Each structure stands twice: as structure tokens, then as C-alpha cells.
Length: 380
Picture 1 (cartoon, one colour):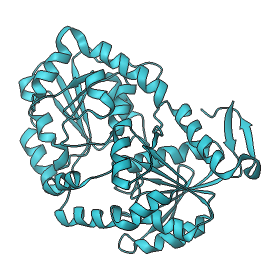
Picture 2 (cartoon, rainbow, N blue to C red):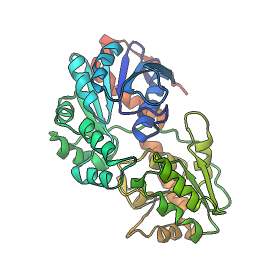
Picture 3 (cartoon, rainbow, N blue to C red):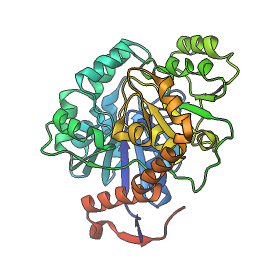
Picture 4 (tube, rainbow, N blue to C red):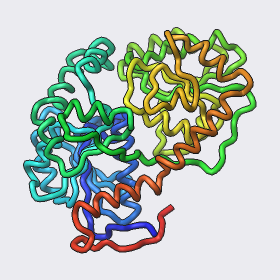
């Protein structure tokens, strides 16, 4: 029996939501969890910086999105009061987490740590900025200041989105114990149809830290393989250079940005792909790993969060992505490894199971009797 908090209000705090030109992992998680809670009858808000053409108040997949000017982050406090939520849930902490706790001290405050940065991580970001070093420094000031650390320690519940960051998070924020896992919900298709031709996809922003050129360099070395590079760069000139250099390769598809909330096109690409390659210099646990594994893709990656590459694909050593790809293609090793990955994702991250866990946590924090906890049928 699933749970529906019919009178509950939940407000998500995030540095982004997957819309209005900002399409990162934190925003994808925020929108997915919010959408699924709204489908269960929960009243859902999100307080985020305004991007692009975003208006101060928007409706997105059943979520009321309250946006503050990106250069006036202190306005998040007033928006948290407007939401008047029972639970304020930060998808990765920021100064908004502290502001919410100050503005609404009598409510439940939850933090999910998704990609905690130590100073070596920030140095990597500074060495490979998406836009500029100034942007990275601004992120540090907003996301990693003493008020943020204090807010994490003062939260009613703290979780991690991956096992591999639990000990790291405890050290960074000086927590008494390693936070438990709170899985990110992912749809697991009942069946997939793989392409007859070997197919490798890339699913990430074309940021310098992601090193997409390492993926593109594989393309001419494996003419028998079809490569699909989904995405685009935030830096327009960097994007232009990559497309000019590699766009003419006959076995490479460049579909551009694909919005997974608007169509099933991304799922179709993953369904026909044999392998998903990740060439980033550093990662937390990317949503792309979980989504690709759910579609029975083997993982080819130099980073190995939660053992996704070493257990369900090939972990690249010394930058030898070509060797890892050959290993997966030989004897169809990718197939069994992809099947194992899908089984793990189904048990750990499957949509209804992960959303149920969020509801259970919220119910424990606010008190089921006081907030009208009721049984409900599963929402598809």
C-alpha cells in the first residue's frame, strides 16, 4: 500500500530546475521528484533562481515554481514564507537552505547531498569551468560558505544521493555519522530494443570538465560503431568548435539537447544504445548513469561512483577509453553487464519505490496523525 500525504506541502530548494535553459542533474532530480509527489496529491513548490524567460511564479508539472533574481538570493527567504510548506527539502545545500531555516524555523528541513565539493573538486572546476572561473567562484560563495555548513548540520534529516559520497559528506560537514542513501527516482522501462549495429551514446553537458572531446576521439577509431552525442555546451564558442571539428564524421549523430520531460526521445536513444560513455574528470553519481543502466546500457567511464563502471561496464584506466570500449564490445560483454545494471537500478532507484521513500521520510518528520496520512493506490 502506497502513501499519499493529501494535506502536505513540500517545498524544494535548488540552484536550478530542469527548465528555462538550465538543464543540470540537480534540476532534473528536483523536477522529477516534485512531479511525482504532485501526482500523488502533495502540494509542491520549488524555490530556485530565475533563468532565461522564467517568470517570478510558474507552474511546471504540477509544481509551483517561485523564482528569485539570481543576483538577489536573499529573496529566497520571502518565497519560502510564501510556500508555507511543512517540509523544505534542499536538493544539494546552498545559502537558500540556511535562509529557509531562518525564515521557517518551525518546519521540517531535509537536505539531500548530491555532489559535495571538497577543495580539490573546486580546483578541478576552476581548471575546467563551464563558462568562466568567475562563475565557479560565485558558486563557491553561494554553495560552500560557513552558513551552508551550519544549515546542513542543523537540518532535521540529511541524506546522500549515492553511497560513494556518504563518508565524504560526513567529513566535509562534520556530521556525527555518514548520511543514509536517499535514491533519486528513475523510470525503469519494462523492455528495451537494442540497435542491431553497435551503438554508444554520450549523455552530458558539453562542459570542459566533462571532456567530451575524449568521446569524439573514439568515433573515427571505431567506424563500425554508431556514436550518439546528446547535449550541447553552455559556452557557445566551445560548442561551435566541437561541432566544426567532429560534426562531419559519418558514424556520429549530434541530436543536440533532448528534453526528457517533453518527449520519449531520450529514452528511445538509451533503449537502442549498447553502451553509455562518460568522459568527465570528476562526478558525483550522475543521473545519466542511473538512467542508462535502467535501459540496460553498459557504463564506460573513468570515474566509478558506486561501482557503476566497474560492476556494470568498464572502468577506464590511464585514459584508455578505446581499450574499455573494445573490452565491452568483445564477446558482447556489454549485454550481461547492462542487464546487471538494470537489475540493480530496479531494486534501488525504481520510480515508485524511491518516491515512496521520500513520502515515508516526510511523514516521519511532520507526524502522520497531525498531517492526515492516508493510504492511496499507486499512481502510474
